[in-house]
Image (cartoon, one colour):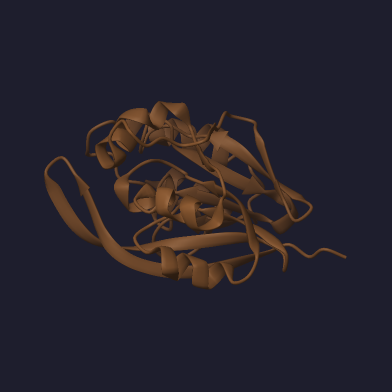
Length: 206
């Protein structure tokens, strides 16, 4: 019997936008079983990501959004694994800030899509705000959601930079993420896990 699971690592590097650069630690989430997996986001270091993957076949590189600290090594990871890169098309301007116009992703993500791996599905939730094509990936069979930089422990992701919108991210969180069961574990793009219930309560009080 196939048993899907979530594996996790942290890789360090930089995030650059609007003429500023910051040191950041990014979570890498790998979802699959002993045979195959998908990688969620591709920050900083291909070898570090592949150390989490191990000898499994990577079936997709799913990008939650196109800030450089989430997609910088996606093309290199594609080259090493043969896996397609999946990204929402509204992320084109941010993608091109990192990769220019000569490199692109392989398949567009749309709201409601299912990314299949290891006998389970990850449902794509379009949650614009942090970035125009930001998405979250809900894995009901695993009781979790991968939120990229849309929702963290303590509230919404940052919206003070180009291509972001503070009102829109809150609306996205309320409509799409807070509709999930409260016990759903939130696996974030940076920092510790939280739950939908905890963040629903925190945002209500703010």
